Structures are given as structure tokens and as C-alpha cells.
Length: 526
Image (cartoon, rainbow, N blue to C red; front, side, top):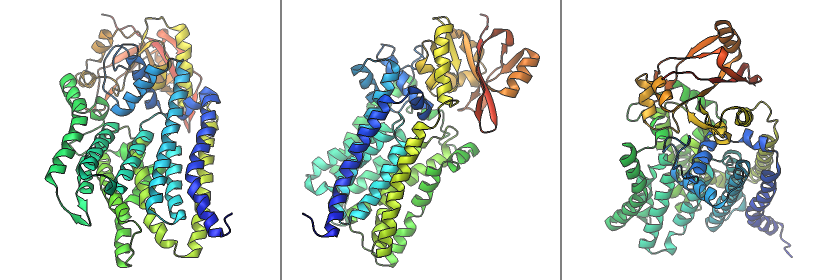
């Protein structure tokens, strides 16, 4: 029997990190497999279905292809390889495959939380401090990572990297160097924008007894092994496509030309996670300065060093986004920041916990964060899916599976959900899962030629209500161009006719914008 209340609290906290994730795995695992499927489609981003369809096609012998016609490398490698493995093992209807994928992501998230807290338990004595960092990561992971993208697996690898660094003295230097190199290579292949890590990690390797000492042998081994892991993928891209980066990265990046794109700023400023991340990450040096002035000694100098180096990686990535991303910002671009924030808050919380009042404030804040995260996550699943973008596309795909000819080929932008559930070949019109040639086609105004070459028979468009009924309704036709995001130019013009309209959806309401989805038969001639 534990008579001391403080010991009871410590005992409780020591097991929370285990029971909370397991309980969540059971609850949300049940939810994932039993909730109406439309709720899951509404919850997941469209890009997640690009991955699903490519993995599905790969296991049908079609290679890495979204449309089943053209090969693509428009994906982050590790998550794609995991999905192709899942599709190789399981052979269920596509709806069930989505449920299985989300459940596997739940397991990944639980493992991440376990590794993270177990590592903190080794180096942080105060259970409230540990649980503060745990709660932040828990909230951010469950709210941002369960959606079919690569965020969850990336944060798991970072949690393992932290555990490796904290336990580095348990390994021989060669073993430690090899493990760090392997993890670096895997992290970079999980998200290629983590490449700065290859330069940052050696600083962890060569730190010994508060001295920075370059060990040339370790450096060569580290870069050799991490390079050997990354090189086959990059070499494959170069040999097959003539580019190192996948088309989904190449199309969005202006590197080395700096383009401060207003749409990127707008998208980032409207995302609360980005704003909070930016504030916390950018003021971290201020805390380090304050800590030096007040002579604050961190409980774990090793954790501080790791946090600083992760912070440097985040800063490089953050400014790369601002300077070179031309379009298509999404929350998973900043997935690494979730982990960085959880580390950054540890020292300030530890310092202020010297005040008993702050202890109570912190505990209340932790309870609030956990309850709020649970509420938001539950609410996001259970908010009415009717009218949601993904649900509408799922519904349209089911409709056209019954109405369009079996040999129909559909041309459509933002077509992840539609293309995955459609039984017709769907060619992506924005270029993220096409090949590099498509951007040149748009630039050289050869879109009509491209559509003929790929035997496009139908086109799916999302148009504003006003345009549908005023422009097309009045003129009985309309002309369209598609935009090359890489070259920032419009394609040649092609025309659709009201007489070829096969499907008109009910209106979709997005704030003050009302839009509809239309499927037209395409008559391009030869």
C-alpha cells in the first residue's frame, strides 16, 4: 500500500503513459472498424488516397501508378512501401483496406507515445514535466496524424532517434554510429524534406563529455550508411525520370529560385498548428537566453542538446517552406514540428514547476488539453459528413461506377478519393501523381494532344453554381485551361458542351461558396 500521496501521484503518472495509449488503441480501434465509412472519408485528406491507389495498383501488377496507365513517383517512399506491403498481405474491399490502414496508424501512434514517454522517464524525474510533454505530443499526434498520411511513422522514427541518443553510452561508438545512420536514412526516405537531418545528426555523433570532437571515421561510416540507404531511391529517380526529387516535390518547389508565394503564407497563417508551432519554435532561443541569465540548469543536458539540434532542423525546414513552396501547403508538411514542440516545452515547464501554484496550473492545463484533444478528435470523426468534399467524391465515384462505360477514362484534379474508389482509370489533372512530362505539356500548350494520347473520354469538374447556371447554362458551352504549378502558366484551351453533360451533383456549400460537380463526355477528335 502506498501511503505517501506524492508517491501515489508518481505511481499513477508512471503508468499513465502505458494505459492511456492502450485504452485509446482499443476505443479508436473499435471506432475505426465500426463507424459508418462516410465519416472516415470525410476525415481523411485527399492526398492519402493517392497513396492508397498507387499501392493498390502496384499489387495488381501496374507498377507505381495512380491512373493505371502512367508511372509516377509522386509519393514519399517509406509510407508508400509500407502501404504496398499492407496491400500485399490483405486483400479486402477498398473500404476495409482504409480501415486496416488507419488501425495500423493507431498502433504506430501508440508505439510512438510509449517510446517517447519511456525515454523521458529515464532522464526527467518530475512526472508532471514528463506528462506535460507526453500530453502535447498525444494531442498533436491524435489530432494531426491519424489520417492516412506519413506523419505518424515519421514521428515514431524521431521518437526512436531520441531514445537512441539518450542511451548512446550503452552502445559501442561503431554500433551507435551505424544505428544513427540507418535511422537518418529511414527518416529522410519517410519525408524527403527531412534531408537537413543528415547534416545535423553528426553533431550528436561527435559530442562526448561536453566536447565537440570530429571523428573522421565515424563521420565517413555515418554518411556512407545513410547515403547507401537513400542513394538507391535517388538514383532510381534520376535514371528513370531524370530528376532526383519525386514529381510531387518537384512540382511544388521553386528551389533554388526564391518565390515568396502569397497562397503559401495564407495557408500557413490559417492553420492554428502552424501558428502555434512557429511561435514556440521561434521563441526557443529566447528561452535559452533567459535560462542562461537566470542560471537555470536543465535536468538533462543531453535532452537539451538533442532539442537544439532538432530545433535547427525545424528552422531550416520552416524557412525552406516559406522561400520555396509554390502551392499545396498541408499540415503533414510540418509533422516534424509536433515532436519538436513536445521537446521545447520541457525546460520551461520544469523551471516554473518550482512554484506550487504553477504545479496546479500545469495539472489543470494537462487535464484540459487531454479532454480538449479527445473532444476535438471525437467531434472530427462524428461531425456530419454530408456535404463534405471527400464524401461527395466518394458518392460520385460510386455513381459513375454504375453509369460510365467500363473503358471510360476520367480527367480530374484533386482526384485522390474519386480515383481510389472509381473503377475507371482516372488521370490526375493537377500533376501531383502524374509524371514530369505533364507539366511540359501544359507549358507548351499541348493539353488537347495529351488528352487524346491518353484516350480521355470524360472530364469531371467542380464549378461554382453561378458559373454552371449562368455561363454554361446561357452559352451551352464553356472553355477551360489547366494551370501548370511548376511553370506558372496556363495550358491551351479546350471546350466542353452542355449537350455532353452526364452528371450534375447537388450543391456543395463551403462557407459562402456554392459549387457543383459535373461529368462531361469529351469529344476531342483525332
